Length: 79
Image (tube, rainbow, N blue to C red):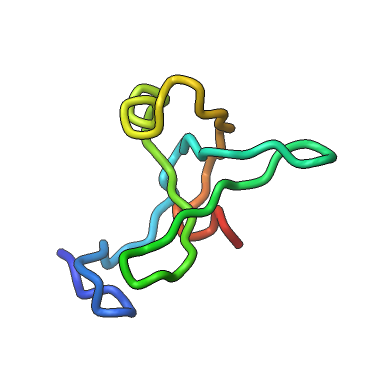
């Protein structure tokens, strides 16, 4: 069963369960790496995560650095 998300942006699962391992694109910073943020069509900043490294590379290219997060919901990555 699904319901509309809090922003009216589409269906979300009614039960929030951990997503398992997520592949999150990162960018280099002075003391390590930071989550790479993107823009929505309306200009808001957002983080993205992929279920596999292959999907990340297919969308962002083979040279995109990434890190694995485990046990987080995708919306927690940018927090």
